[in-house]
Image (tube, rainbow, N blue to C red):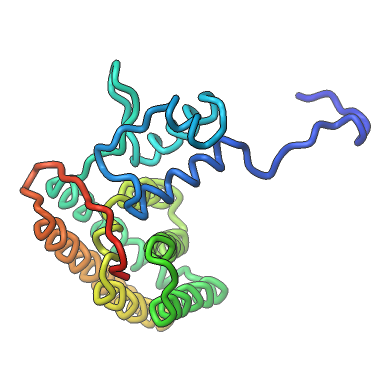
Length: 248
């Protein structure tokens, strides 16, 4: 317990620590494809380039490790985690099961403000597609909106264990979002699917919401798999994502 002092003596805390800001910056670079899978993240080099000490860099990398974006190797340091088709299959198999169940429960428990938030989210996604910004920022924002949509439905399930597990899966999915949103057709398919799921939730149709969610995630897996193979991937093999330019 911190001993209470007068307000003048209390320390001031920044809204975000330096390491948090660095993790946000590096996460965005990974999601945008500016930093690619398997790329080394050398603490000293990053510290020099970003004008900070190595300590907050190390803390930021540990945050990204906890999210599944970065991994540490003995004697080699950090690198962006590789992606593989096998992992994709395992990840989406779990997401279909958990998020399908979450959608069924959400149809029963979801509150009007949450339905409004989902509608606003999907409207924002469509607006971004109709009025695209710079390529990197658009992909990052599309992934953020997608994750927010799915997280809101999971939250509405009112099952705390499901919420915790699904959050981990969504974080692990970040690297694959680059593949899903790298062309406009996939993004618009996502918007349509979300609209259908939202309608089922609003009508309290639990079975339909579950069916639609599972189908949506199955289609997403197929689209990502197709993109990965087009870019040179083979089953079970990690592959590097080229830095896309001007695709969205």
